[in-house]
Image (cartoon, rainbow over all chains, first blue to last red; front, side):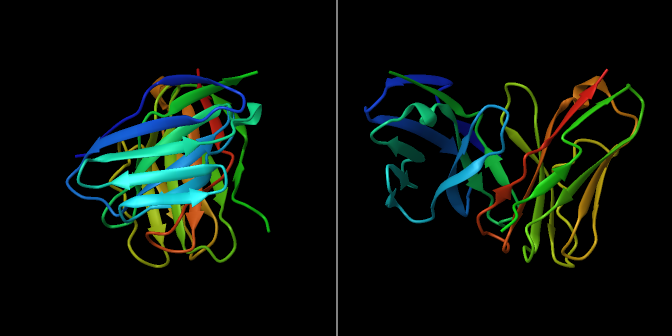
Length: 110
Length: 113
């Protein structure tokens, strides 16, 4: 089976940097995704890591270490609109499903 | 272009009734997925379709749940004899192929009274 852990809630200030961690235990997976979900809306794709290392995409970066069972999403220059839930998900080896963590709710204040 | 669309947006039903939820994937996407999100919980995988291959039904919670897809177009998720624990947001996603990024629809909010 697969177990994915993320902090439930985080708070940060506008303009700051925040790191959202995701740890997992799994027998194998195809890649790791991060999605953003605003309240009452659909999840939207942020990033995808297959290999170890850092993927940078504007203000957002995602890191994966398969040997440590660990990923993080780094958000820079926080804006109020970044207040949302951030979902860590593993793609199963067959590529037929994403296994999601419960998500981290980020609140950005001014 | 148009994203994934789902209908209805909201559905309120009585316990024991059947419901049918619809998903229109992004045109050209061969992969289609259904997920369920209960209040305060993570998304749970339900079923996966890829072209004309046999679907992966491993996530369906009971035999009251079924889904169909015609070719690479519309999919319907049917829940028979609904129970209160079926209350959730049902999300559909599509992707250009297996192991590719999934793009989610807005979901159908189902409330079973």
